[in-house]
Structures are given as C-alpha cells and as structure tokens.
Length: 455
Ligand code: SF4
Image (cartoon, rainbow, N blue to C red; front, side, top):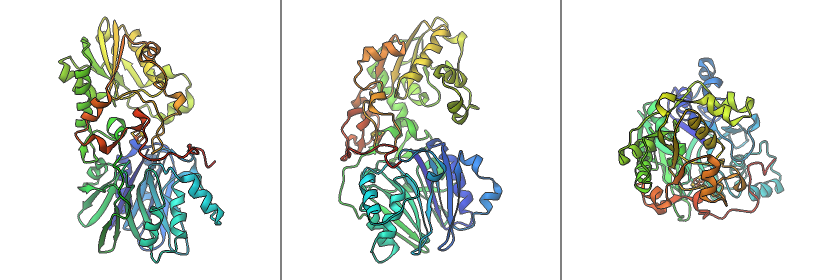
C-alpha cells in the first residue's frame, strides 16, 4: 500500500503535491517524499515519517518547479528504511528520473538478477528501482519509447507516476490492480491514487487512468497509449473494503456507498437480532450504517476512538495487544451493560485485535457479543501490494469457523459471503481480484517472492 500523486504545469507544484500526500496519508505512514523539476534536473526531499512532520513551509518553498511527483510509503517489497523512501530519484547521463510506485511487481527477482548480470548496481531493495534501470538500459530512441520498453517488461501490480527528463508519465498495469485517477486544475494535469487528493487541491476529476493505459504529458502535449496485450481486469477489491478513504471514488465507484452496501448484504445474510449494532471505528463504520438500516437495529457507537493516538507511538513501545486496543478504543459502559451487541468489523487478518476488542466489550458489561465481518475469510496472502502476513499467520487459513469464533470469544461469528461481497461492488464481479479470499491469483506467482527477498 502506497499513495502517489503528480502535478504537471503548476507554479505551486510542490505545495499541491504536499497537500495531495496529506490527503493520501492513510495509504502509508512509513515515509513520504516529493521530487520536483522545471526542466531536466530533478530536486527531491524525502524522509521517514508522516508528510506533515517531514515538510514545512521552508522545505516546500525550496522545491521549485512546475512539475512534481509525491509518494507515501507502506512497504511491500523492501523493508522500511531511509534508502527505500520514494520517489526514487536517479541522475543519469540520459536525464534525471523520479519514480513514485504503488503496487508490487511479481517478476522482481528475475528482472533484478538479469540487470545485475549486465552490470547494474542497485541502491535500494525496492522492486520500484528496477523500473529506473530498465528505462536507462533501454536501447529505444527517446524517453517515451524507453519508458514503454521498460513497462512492457514488468509483471504484477503497478500504478505509477514518473518523471523522465521533464516528461510526466502516469501508468496503470494491464490488470489495473491499484487505482489511479486523472484530474485537472485550470491548465495543470494531476494524477492521484484516490479522488480525495484531487478534492483537497480543488482539482476536477477527469477520469480514471484505465488498466493498461500509459499517459505522457509534456509541454503542450497530452498523449494516451495502450501498449500492452489485453489482460483480465483485476482491480483490488480490498481497496473498496478497507484501504481507500470513504470520501474517495476509486475504480469509478464511491467507497462510502460500497461499504454501506456491504453492510446491507451482511444484514440480509445474518438474521441474528441484537439490541444494537456498532462499528469498530473507523473502518467498520460505513458497513455498520448499512447493516443497521437494513436490519432495523439501533446504530450506536459503543467504542470511542482516541484520535490523538498515532500508530507511530503505539507500535514500537508496546507489546500488549490489549493495551494498544484500550489506548485507541474506549467502551461506553453505560450503553453496553446487559446488551446483546452486534459488532461490525471490515476484516479479520490475524484475529488478535478482534479478540482484544471483544474482551473489552465483555468487560464493559455486554451480555452477548456477535460479530459480522464485511468480507469473506482471508485465506491467502497478497502479492500485489498489500502487506498481509504469511499464509500461516492468517487466522482463517485452515481453521474452522467454530475455532475462530471460540478464539475471538464471540457468541456468534458471520462472514459476508463471496457473492454478497461481489454483489455490493455495483461493477462486473469478474473485473475484481479477490485472490486473498479465494486463493485464485489472476497472474502467475513465482516461487521466490517475499517482502525481504532482495535484502
Ligand atoms: S489478493 Fe486481495 S489484497 Fe491483494 S490485490 Fe487481490 S484482492 Fe487486493
């Protein structure tokens, strides 16, 4: 998971990109960066941490130029360290290149071995760096052709915004795993992972970059090409269930409305009557609204989130999952006491956090705790840019429903069916990747693939 943003032809390109990253912060909290150019030379500023902590007025002012790309990182190939912060920038005799990448390449190992065999020296352990090497090694005649030559060698998931010697490139892999949209602000072009970033810079949404589309923008010229062989659309369904912001439209559909429909479908499948339905804030919120409306059950906020607790504080310093849950979510005891409660989760990955939440509700006096999950059991890892744990660590892998219910400490547990989830999408179901729920991957997955395979 990462967030990418690009702006072409705006005197405040760096400032706008900063705002874009600010809107996309939920897509990764490990690091952020901006690369900017006016002509051929690229200047960049990047660091570990949140965009708002890395940049200030002075640092943004120093990034002069009308063309900028930005990146927010949550690592999926290559560990979280300063060398792996994006945009990845190279200064080369053929021109400077900056890369902002969301997704995970699946032929990383083979490509890197090949490039190293031909003398390439890598600076990072990210799959994204390979793209720069493929562009500079290409024998094609110009930057446009070299970029296409590089993209044609990639397999797996990528939404990209690139700067190649003053040329801006926006691209989405032929399957369209990750989102990328195109906007306009007066005469400037904007690329963003989600439309919430366009909203913040007051750019108008034009359209999604299509799966397999590559857009080249240079002074006075906009060109769209589709250089790839036809491939099956495989948009990541998990973006709509969990990752993207509810105020965004991605894949041409609204995230909030989709999550509400997931809740409606859950209520149609689960007939248990409770005194109240409550979300796990914030991500379970919208499915819980749909569930409450469809089941005619009172919607309540039984857990209140402390919005001042950042993950950066909690994760390194605390080992107890219970403590982390208590710091983040506090129950309303007077409301929960003696009640039969339906709690709505967006998903269950390891199950440890859900277990701690249920314990909190029981300690607060809930008489019965039932749970609905707004997607099917996650049984397989993701190789396309979502950092799920290994198959062994996924609670639903190889465990019965009864075992999971008992482990989490619930009176009943209900997962939304695969059909119920796909039906909520309001788009053709065959256009989605749902491999983490089915184990059926839309592309070949090589034997050697893991987050730290290049380290
Ligand atoms: S495997 Fe799951 S998380 Fe990964 S792209 Fe497919 S649907 Fe998304």
